[in-house]
Image (tube, rainbow, N blue to C red; front, side, top):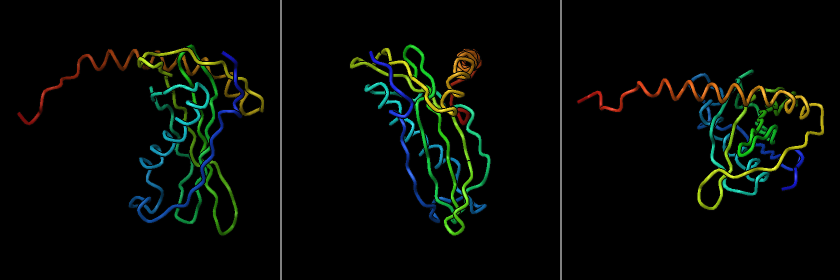
Length: 170
C-alpha cells in the first residue's frame, strides 16, 4: 500500500451564499456548513483510501468569523493524519468578500473517517506524506489529536451506557 501526499487528497469547493443558506442573524447557517464540510471531507478520505469511508467523528469545528451573503465560501479539505484504518481530514473554510476581495479563515475542523472493505469492516489505509509547512504542522500534531479522540470516544460510550431509550412521552 503506497503512501500518498496530502495534496493527492485535496478537495476544494467554492460556492455562494443565498438567502436559504442563512440563519436569523443573516450569516451562514452552521449546520448547513457542517454538512457541506462532511461531504467534501469524505471525498478526501475516499481519494486517500480508494475505499468506502464512514464518518467516525467531527471534532473541534471552530467558527472563527461569520460568513455573510456578501461572501463566497471556499471549503478546502485534505488528509492530515492516518491511523491503521482511520483517516483524519482537516477542513478550512475561507470566506471571501466578493466586492472587496478580502479573504479570511472563517472555520476550521477535523473529521475522522474509517475506511471499510467490501464486507463493511475496517480496512488498512495508506500512510500520508505532508509536504507544506501547514501539512507538516497538522501531521506532527495528529497523533495527539488521535489519542484525545480515542479517550473522548471511550468517555462518550461510558456516558451513553447510562442513557435511556424509553419514550419520555409514555
